[in-house]
Image 1 (tube, rainbow, N blue to C red):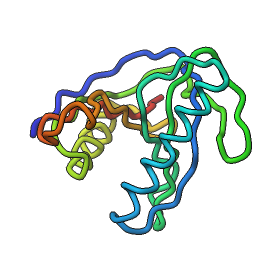
Image 2 (cartoon, rainbow, N blue to C red):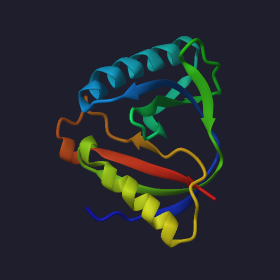
Image 3 (tube, rainbow, N blue to C red):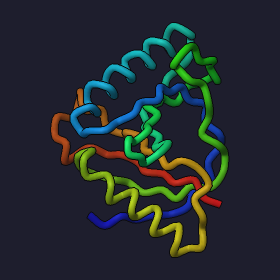
Image 4 (cartoon, rainbow, N blue to C red):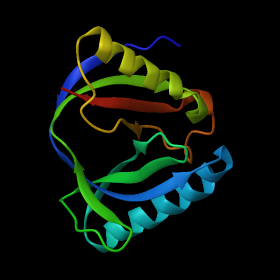
Length: 152
């Protein structure tokens, strides 16, 4: 797949997240599903409007440290292992990935390459936002995900 990358200016976005270490691909489904269930329930209980699910790559590891997150409005306090933070305002290199989640690595390579080719330095953790709900779209070839790299 060819990736069309570009730079966008983003406003700060409050999020709620749960950090999880991943050492094998088999861990992703169960850990991610459970975390999203908890985050959406927590946001609802706090009266927050949840946005799209996302994944923030905190450390490539091994083990890989991910923050399984959702955007929320308004800013909502965390509790225990549910962390409240924000994606910072600023420029991001972004691209659209279409296809199964296990092929999204190429989109990350594309945003990092684009940043380097345009004299931009990474300025935060890369993240992906899932634009397609797998519960309503059964075909992974049609999944749409946005991959972003904050840059300076």
